[in-house]
Amino acid sequence: KRDEELAAAGQAAITTDGVHIEVVANIGGLEDAQQSVTLGGEGVGLLRSEFLYLERTDAPTEEEQTKIYGDIAKALGTERTLVIRTLDVGGDKPLPYLPMPAEENPFLGVRGIRLCLAAPEILRTQVRGILRAAPYSKLHIMFPMIASLEEVREAKKIVAEERAALGVTADVKVGIMVEVPSTAVMSEIFAREVDFFSIGTNDLTQYTLAMDRGHPKLAKQADALHPGVLRLIAMTVKGAHAHGKWVGVCGGIASDPLAVPVLLGIGVDELSVSVPAIPAIKAMVRKLNKAECQKLATEVLQMGTVAEVRARLSGLVD
Ligand code: PEP
Ligand code: MG
Image (cartoon, rainbow, N blue to C red; front, side, top):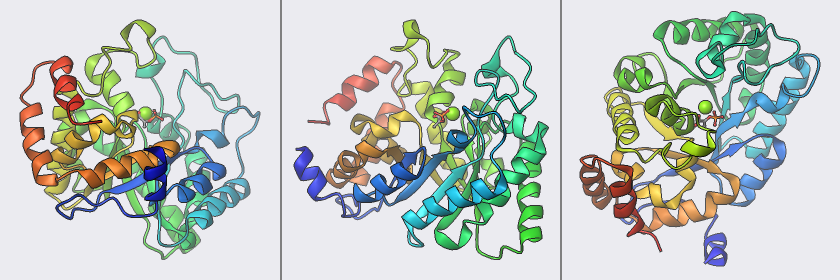
């Protein structure tokens, strides 16, 4: 089966009724980018830029960042999308060069975009490094842990200012991660001011169910296929599409073939998956009919428990 999937990896992921679903990669550096291309990835839906910042004593310079983002963009080429997520760290992952007091609840503290807006020079340096990669691929900037429209406006202002200062004229899209339930609920409002959304189901599940995503005793219950989480994904899609904006899923659930039919049925436009999962997810999409998936999603969104959802979906994978 894996051999068949690999042989077809270069072909697009199009449903039996002709809908193209973009299957892209979650990556943590240049090697992953190169491998994603080999395995048929149509681009990168999430570059976790933390890899540049962790395990060092000083912040990465603009030159270092320009080099690495440029190399990754060149590995993908001008026909592929590259979504670079700005620094997403917080009290649980301290950086010696950033003022980060210990917090009682780091997952509810100054993390993600909150931290970057509190230390805007770090963000500005990163944004300049990212913008310089614009000529080499279809560049997208994405902000993590967005919880308010003010954060979006402040972050977009920084991008606009740095863009003007650098004289970057290429089209660079600016989007947000949906990881906080209020952002899913308010997606229609956010959609007026952002170019795209990517749903981080790992954090969205954690914050929706109030269950630590790494808790060993809650691992089974903290499931992104919980009907409450699926309803938030559906809300996000509805709000985004009302304004013609696309929605991806970059949380771990997108890498599970079992979840693909329901995500497609809800109307997700892009699946950003772990590099090794690309061929299997593309193969799954090719087997599906979007109209059938929509019926399935309507049914699943009426269910009350994860167990029911999983039982219904497991009948669809071999
Ligand atoms: C997520 O929260 O689902 C996500 C993709 O981001 P990360 O796993 O890096 O927090
Ligand atoms: Mg996250």
